[in-house]
Length: 150
Image 1 (cartoon, rainbow, N blue to C red):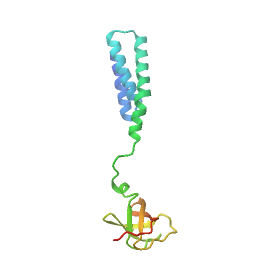
Image 2 (tube, rainbow, N blue to C red; image 1 turned 90 degrees about the vertical axis):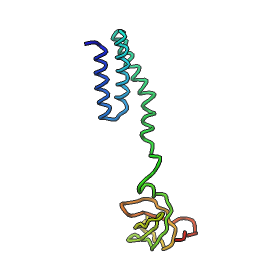
Image 3 (tube, rainbow, N blue to C red; image 1 turned 135 degrees about the vertical axis):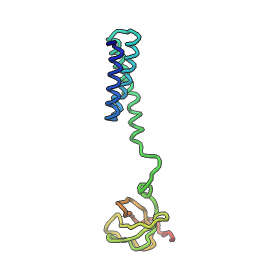
Image 4 (tube, rainbow, N blue to C red; image 1 turned 180 degrees about the vertical axis):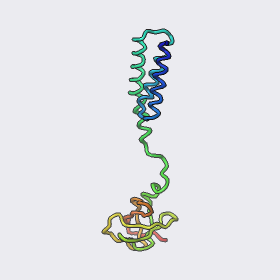
């Protein structure tokens, strides 16, 4: 079997392994195997093929993998769902205590509890949404003295 076919098989195995593991390392090594397959098809000797494979893989791991990982770890540009409500301002429609309360976030009415269980937020107070747990907003009174109007 020609050496370039062996390199193609190695590239295919590494590519399949990359798809199943998503490490961004095995895929770059598969690219190195493809480059080694090209050098083998030209007729260069095996030691040079291995050097090309190693150099191409190392260059990919050093240059491309950090960039790919940085892009994967970035948060989504657009928050949606309950994540979009965190950080918004809301209006306390009823007194908000550790047992019950209602707030209006945007145009929606939500059940609410204070983020700090010892705090009681009066009706009509402006609050900040700090978290969402299920269908309950965890809120904290705003620092500014001016409540927002309903």
